[in-house]
Image 1 (tube, rainbow, N blue to C red):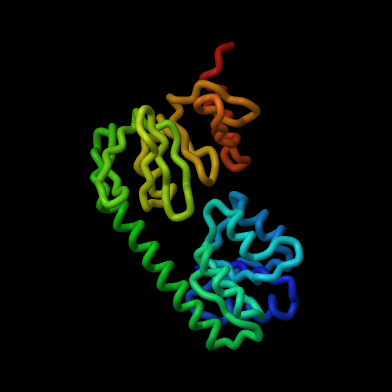
Image 2 (image 1 turned 120 degrees about the horizontal axis):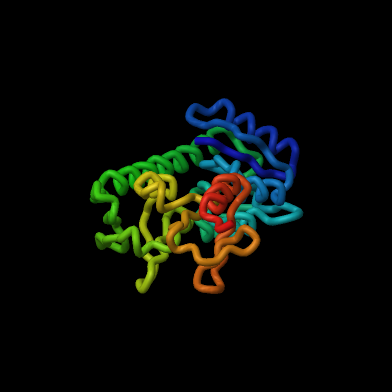
Length: 245
């Protein structure tokens, strides 16, 4: 698992980073003394974090508020000097918390919980993809949603959004469908000439685009899908090919 560490105390940050680097199965991306800087990374297209260790009490943005602000947060382990913050941490889906000063044994126990969650999520997503009844004609596939198997017709899809561990299919004349899948896995099933990834969290049906405003794709007059820097050139190339001159 790729990890980031967020703690405004330099000694605590150094200690947890050292624990990450000595623990098999973990890879340190970087450490942040500022939760605002960490949030900027976590919301960027460069984000590769599977797990983050975050201090509850941060001066610029509290750890709990940081997690709440993320659309698709990684697995969370909170670090804190105060055990009373544990309940607040679990409310935002943290797998565990460790009390300062942090012993390596306590750290390892929390990591083992995170690894179990990571393995379960990875396994569930793989199973979802493999069990999806993909039809080679490229017109539809089936996904699991709320204990049901639902058919998704490609022509019905307006856009797809990544929401935490799920993807949400926005469809014409139907309510959205949620399924436990990664947006990267879904992207692999879609016809490349009809669908395009325009953002870390969004795929759009090119045939459904009727309006673009300042590199934002507009659906239904009031839904704006951003085109991020990473995908801007590819999207602009599509526009250039289809522009009337």
